[in-house]
Amino acid sequence: MIINESGSEARRAAFTVGAGVVGVESSDTLWAAAVASGLGGSPLEPDARQPDLVVRTTESRPRMLDVQNPARDGTSTATDGDVAYLLVGNAWCSVPAPWRSGPVVIECSPSFPTRTLLDRVALPTLQVLMPFRGAAAIHGTGCAVGSRGVVVAGWSESGKTETALALCESGAAFVSDKWTAVAPDRRLSALPATVGIRRWVVPHLPRLGAAIRPLPRAQLRAAGIADAVLTRVRRAVPDAAAVGDALDRVERVRALADRAALTQAEVRSIYPTTTPDPPILNEVVFLTVWEDDHVKAEPANVEDVARRLSLSAAYERRGLFELHERWSFGGQSEIRDVRALVRTAEEATLRVLLSSADVTAVHSPFPVDPHRVVEAVHSV
Image (cartoon, rainbow, N blue to C red; front, side):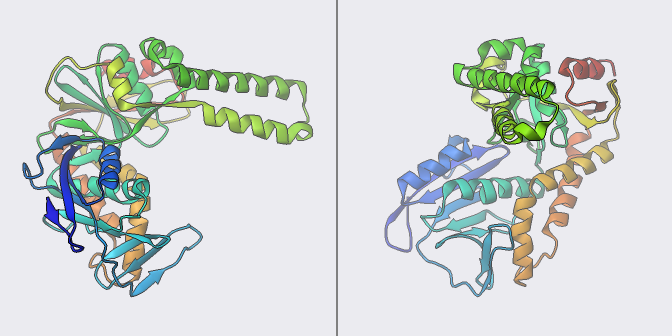
């Protein structure tokens, strides 16, 4: 417990999140609980290890010397001459420099929305500071065969989740989705994310299909009904313009319902681990999509995969880098191209982490039966 600038007691907590430790400090217990819940990490004693990232509230509003209003993006930022801030109404949150040594600190007003804090600043910052500490957050889905960790990685919408779940159907344990943290010792862990399950893949994953809760099951069923309605109407009414508005509404319903969101804990309960220790990175499956109908797998070049993974991750984090670009416009950041700095550091770190792993490149259509992808990987 510490005393903040207003004289009130600020409670401290610490959590392991992926390959890092995040400290939370605030006298507002509800705010701290919301942040802790969003981090989804495992509690630590506050002084057990120096945090990589500290998130705390403060009552002292900085004096903004340069404000950047929305540029058709709904975002307002500012600088106080040294630090960049994201603004939401009268609330504010600092955007820290992840390349600096020591704990990276995010300060925000108590009224700053916690979901915005986590999604736009804290979690992306935790990811981009990892390469400067010998770790990495790979844009991919993790699973494990015993102690052997496998990460299925690649660009968005390339089949990462589906392929990893097909491996799990064959006996692997589920570790993570969307992002997989790799520690300097190559141990895998999860970062906060939901698991998106597309309707078309469920028939290929019978263990998952049998375990899906009633609500997401009903959601996927509604998407199937909407899809059937769309197909029949299009066949019956060649002139789609005549029922265009109605078709658009049905299509929106289908698109919203066509992917159910499960928690990572739910998926882990379906595909549980059999070992108490985190898996060690042993294999990376790098997916690319092509228009051919067949699936091809081959050994990959580690340096090329490290480069492309760093590019994929940088694109996914573009929202954070845009905040840094606004900081650079304000003339206060010592780094003019934060995206390039982080990408270069991440590529170098990934080369080291992947050097002891089997790396396989897979070219396939998408969507595709994910078991075809798994069979191709096993054939290499």
